[in-house]
Image (cartoon, rainbow, N blue to C red; front, side, top):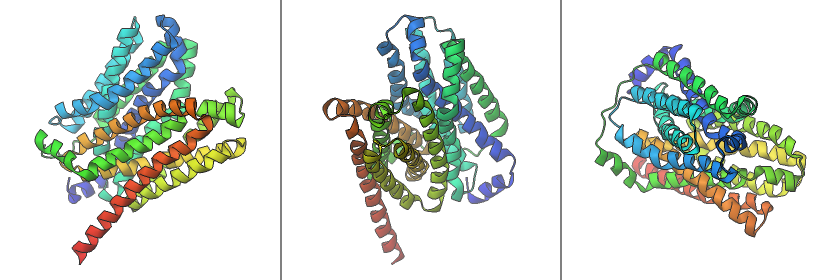
Length: 401
């Protein structure tokens, strides 16, 4: 889309908020289906007569489905018009959750989870590209952040509500609520997202060629490191707060709600910072995350200080995401949807590795070592981001000279 088209679209003030709201609602539903399983895991295990550990594989399977399946689905659908593809993804998402409602056994429920996982990464990848086309170029990161806010709000509102529904009406009812939200998002996408001009689709050779750029690969690594850092600590936040900080277990829920508020605020602010100064905001926020995690190694032993640190850490951890997403799309102009989807794959691999590493750290070094191990991850991400910024600045200086 050229600038005149963007200005023309941006002049239609009513459709764009509703279009972005439809994307945000879709992100909310997808975020809820990813995370609500954690709250209803005992109910699922009991009903399907499997162990908690086996039921937990529903979480692992979902993450692997996002990491591996999403780029493959994006490749095979690269010629499908983006709005049509988004509708197809939401239809599959609805279908997957409908199957989850009626799944008579563990195996079919896993199949339903894998189907919805395929939609997850591709939806966020294509959705980010569409969101960036709905606004003028200087507002792209904010538009992506608006869509991504659905994922963060799902953690604050959707997961507790879905867990409450599952515990009182049965775990299948949780997936029923998600299915309804998916239907609403599906209708909103059909009605409110305008028909955008389809960019000339590059062939697969050119799309894969975009990944030969060292800078793009470094940014995918940077994304994985950032999420690895987050999940190294956050996966074990409950035992940290209970066993180290001294909170009662029932208090953790409210602390996580406050953390989620920080996450949502950070996501919005991060989008605006990225629109203002893209690269400086990325490595600057990584520096802030590193400092906050180092501070957390001290404040984790003080209840009030730990909660305050968690709020700002959550804000910073999610503030960096819109900028990284937009930068990756900018670098892969031949394959923005594939690159955007690959970013979510990299992030999910980082999530899985971070959770695994955190368990190893606890076994060999103890809970209190988690924050500074997470800080090392972010320090590496900061060095990568700062190095890329220095190289780009020197290149721009040569061109101007």
